[in-house]
Image 1 (cartoon, rainbow, N blue to C red):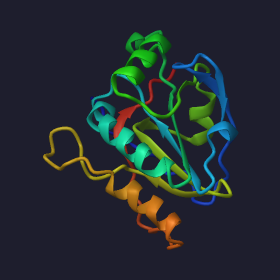
Image 2 (cartoon, helix red, strand yellow):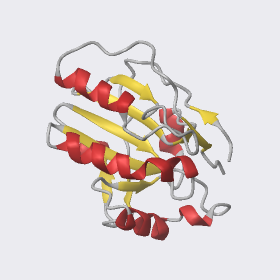
Image 3 (cartoon, one colour):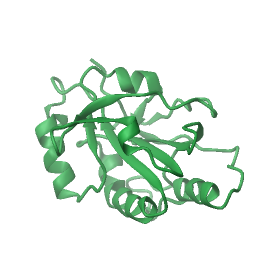
Length: 184
């Protein structure tokens, strides 16, 4: 298990557009389809990474808590499925079902979306405001597999709450840490 940090895309970046296959519905989903009135969370995850497995329940809780307040959520897997077959689309569908994902789980077969988002690891989180400008990128919280800290989504929840309450975002955003994206 490698420890790869986020690349920390510059704040203020406009959300790069995409259309990818949703492995649950087998339909194409565009960024505009999941865009929330208050903001949008784009998550790069995968099936096999222990860092992602560690936070899956919180991703569902977080999505359920904030979708009703006007946020859109989407998860994307960009891993090379030839060398990492456990991340294949049919297993993404199973993973989404087994974890009760309430957000689309998209397959980035060409890895183009991961590249334009400068995604580096799984999990990697991006929060865009209502104008689709990046206001937060980095970790979900301080919990990591085996470190004894409870998963609570503190950092991302704080960023979402800052949008809801019209508060400024923290400038000292911490990068996420996880498995590197498996590039072709």
